[in-house]
Amino acid sequence: MRNKPYTLIYVGFLDLSKDDGKSINEREFVRELLARPDLECCYVGPKMSNGFESPGGRILAERHLGKSPISQMRYQLWLLKTLFRLYKKYGKQVILCTRPNYAAIAPMIFKRLCKAPWVVKFAGLPIPLISARSDIPIVYRKIAAKIFSLNGRSADRLWVVTEAIGDYWERHFKIDRDKMFVLPNGVNLSLFRPDSSSSLPDEIADKIPKAKYTVGYAGGLRKMLGIDFLIRAAEKLIGAGHDYAFVVAGTGEYRDALERMVREKGLQDRFVLLGHIPYRFMPSLYRHCDVLVAPFSRGYVENFGSSSQKIFQYLACGKPVVAARTQDHRFLEDKEMGKLVVSEDIDALADAIKESTSRANAGKNAYDRYDFVARHHGYGVLVDRFLRQTDRLWGESRSQG
Image 1 (cartoon, one colour):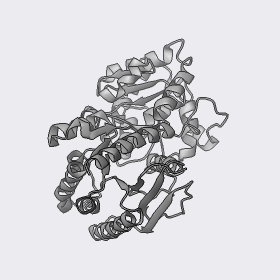
Image 2 (image 1 turned 120 degrees about the vertical axis):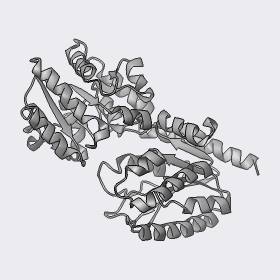
Image 3 (image 1 turned 120 degrees about the horizontal axis):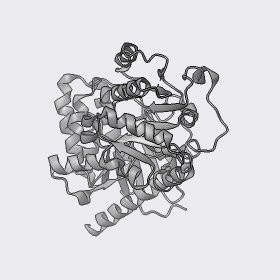
Image 4 (image 1 turned 90 degrees about the vertical axis):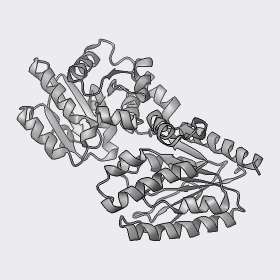
């Protein structure tokens, strides 16, 4: 029974019908929202390429969303008209939730004219993020950064996925912490588990070097994510005679440089870049490894923190984690589920990997790790936390008239 007094309008910019790493978190979160029996939810986004079966709620996806500025502005006009239509349809009893892109002016106009409560989600930082986006024309980057910051300052609530992003908004834009809430990324617990009989397909497994211990990483191949430090740690461990294999899954603009680095260090037989691995095989890849890593660079953890989905997926598969030290990773040490190292410290990274794989009880906490993720990062849990925030926001908006 739908008993919430408002309708949630969730605006996204991803094609939820695609089964790829770019949309996994949003797709799973929105699926959970749409399935809630107590909530009327309407998802508004770009046209789906392969269809998208909704478990409930409504989906409006009527326009293709291109990358050009003209296409973006056309989309904003369509979005503004759609928001006005939904506002009238649901008797003005709506809460808006958006993720800003570099042309996100429609939500600001809608907020100003209709005074509807508005939550805006930030999974990154406006200025550092925009300056690094090669898909955004240079002439629009300053405008884009301004739009991002205006979205944050105009909204009633900022949903940030890491403490570091919240710190950024507080420090640079004087946003009160009471206006923000931290809600991290989640994990599909039906896929990522310690106990599964599924195994890697032979065409993937055959590429992984045979060794006593296997160290894994999954994610984008960008310089800021620190895979080059992992290569140097591999050189140190293998050079000292330890029997390790290293496997990296993912794609990105830094791949050629990484492959060249592997060749220069003579690690071709021990360090393999697999490229893209289909999402459905990622749990099997994680379970194949003995320890999984997130060796982010100093600049990355200082600017972004980390609510990296990969870390929660690693843990859900029961594996120990070695990660760069940042406040968003403190739980790994506090809960004894992994080790933290100072970013870019090669010796510390190598030592943490060695300690994680040599501990006699390394495999005994697999279900403790899974249980922790289930309690804190399952999509059902995250949606519950999100709706507590929207309920509170709705109550505040009513009390203010």
